[in-house]
Length: 232
Image (cartoon, rainbow, N blue to C red; front, side, top):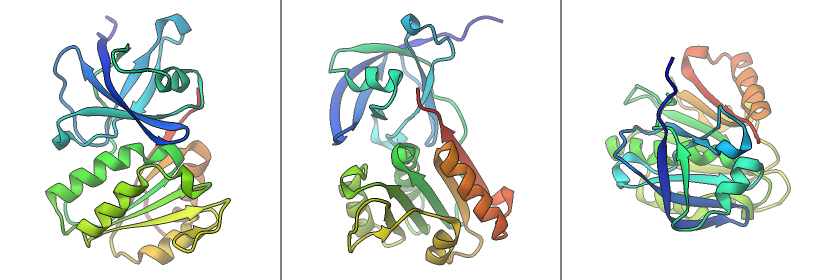
């Protein structure tokens, strides 16, 4: 089997989202096609990790740019986080499937920390295609300072009455946020959306615990989409 061809991505801008998270706008050396919810695999050959590491694309296809959002918490992510405009790296073409094929059912999106990255792309794309579609985003973080895309979520709520975001903070009290960790019972009490589909993204433990809680509450596997990440 021949090796998958790799593309060279060049960083054209870097934007800080939180003290440890930044968004890299990147340009591939030749055009790529993609859809919301996909990712690219990043390779640093000198690290001797031939499988590379996957990063969700945080920009929506209709925005006309390609971006990944990374948190400095591992070898790959630290390298990406340190890049500046003009730097480059090897990566795959966009691929993967983390997407609801439905157009009318409500969506409940559950994210923790950097697990929010594919949801930015998905939410913006869904609201563009079907502005009336009910979407609830439940987003867990330690403190308010850690909330990635906070200002954008506030603006999106103001623009689209069908979209709502609920923030969970585990280490800080804030009148505008839910106190403590997210769990299935709290999510279901907040959503109350008939026939909703659930999308989960975060650490393995986060996705596992919420998936089990939703299944115990009677949510079928067919109504759940999951994506978990590893730190390296």
